[in-house]
Amino acid sequence: MSTELSFPPFDNVRLATLSDLPRIAMVAAAGFYHSPTFQFQRPYYADFPDDTLSSYWTEYQSAIRNPADVVLVAEDVWDPDEGLGVYGALRGSSMYKFGSSPTADKVIVGVCSINLKPGSWRIGRFQTGNHVDSPTPATPFSTQNRDQCAMSLELYGAATAPAKAKYLAGRMRLSTLAVHPAYWRRGHATRLVSWCIRLADKDDVPVGISAAPMGAAVAAKAGFEEQETVRIKRSTAQESVSQFGVPNVGDVELWVAIRQPSRSPSDTSTTCSDSPTGESL
Ligand SMILES: CC(C)(COP(=O)(O)OP(=O)(O)OC[C@H]1O[C@@H](n2cnc3c(N)ncnc32)[C@H](O)[C@@H]1OP(=O)(O)O)[C@@H](O)C(=O)NCCC(=O)NCCS
Image (cartoon, rainbow, N blue to C red):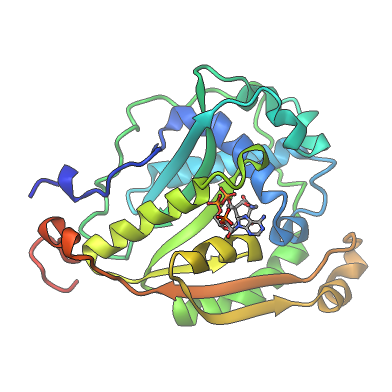
């Protein structure tokens, strides 16, 4: 069986390349803005939208280049009014335009990243677009992360680390998922998640996720089962960080879940185990 055949079919989704980064950064910022985690970790987003875009750009650049990660994008026909669904500070950012003007009829509207299982035979098999140069940002990168609050990040990391270590360590993980708000409820997230779980099913491995509530709704539909929900209460967050001048934030919930592999009879012909030789790694 060739490696190509061992990929699930790409149903309106494709592997990302470095040239997609301007659009991916924009879609990630526009989508994640609606997650309480974004509001919690990036309370100064309204003042520093370029920092937000730059951080997503570098995050996905690393993931595209990382042989142990897979970055997948969903495409749709460009909606000329999509800017109406984007928060004002982002629309006003100098970097925004770079990712918002389409170069084709179809544009990237959703993105997800996957961490392959440590030791997976698939590591290094997804670097398809890396011959393409990464575009130069329209304006110099702002790598200062001024939109973020270091204390919030620390608090979030400390609160979520035990559950992540307990349930997700050593597993394949669906690590990020965002769709541009102008393209919600069209099944884009479902298709991205579906590709990920079909990949896991082919290798007969479980997939883990730590999801914000909106992502949890999609993941639960795809068969992920809750292991634990970590809650960072608004009051706790404010008590812990208020002295540092952090604006009000709502409760933050992280749904830690796992989906066990399932095999349909039609998968059997192309199914391979976790390693090409069928050995446990
Ligand atoms: C969560 C998100 C990725 C869903 O993207 P999407 O492309 O709209 O999702 P789909 O169209 O595939 O929706 C699949 C199902 O999820 C549920 N769902 C999706 N968005 C929902 C919403 N806003 N409210 C309630 N249920 C929702 C529905 O059950 C939906 O099925 P239906 O439309 O048949 O009822 C998108 O809303 C998003 O980017 N949110 C902000 C970022 C975020 O929270 N990401 C998750 C981090 S883990």
